[in-house]
Image (spheres, rainbow, N blue to C red):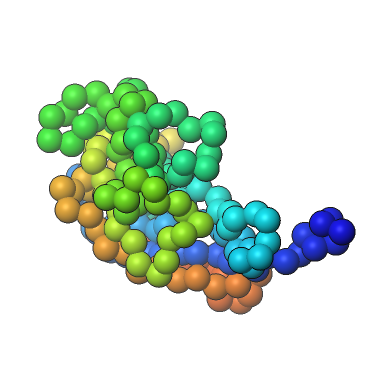
Length: 182
């Protein structure tokens, strides 16, 4: 009987794009995206969601923010977060190397019980780290690792939620001509 009712969930795509500066002070677009499955209240399983992907225009660095439902996540606090990576991140303000125990990026940071599946149409995004290396290589082989500028005040981000597979579910694209010009 349960296997016949596996299609009871409603599936959604969530995304947002907003202008900001990267840690080098350059104007960039920042995109957040994730997928969710919303189950009816009478269903045995709670709502589920993928990690939130945070991308910065012209950067090869992608953050994936997990919540407490992800058992494989290293411990760098509670709520929806991404941990620092040794050799890649510095703690903003102190410039000390970030470790896997440091929370570098978080969503709704004041709510330790926050879950991706429960994020609504507005969220707060807090960035607490800076990249230790902004770029590697030269010319067409160069990789950019810069990301959203750290701030002591969270960014307020408005999110779109649309049925997965619909025409509106297409992610907004970055204007790559900005990257080519640099």
